[in-house]
Image (cartoon, rainbow, N blue to C red; front, side):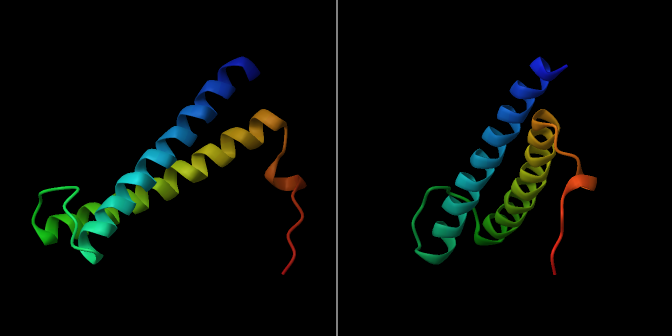
Length: 81
């Protein structure tokens, strides 16, 4: 099943990058008054929060898929505080 996990991990990484690019463009619209998107300010704020949240979810999914692809389990990771 390793063959199928690689494309899924790549798709998750692409999704993460796409969400981050959109979130950064929305942030620029709000802070630098550019106009990547012609939306009301309230919609831009809501969309920025949504895309930022979604990019975190995609990054976690990509990490899990890459870990399983590389054979790393969460039990074998050493956590230091």
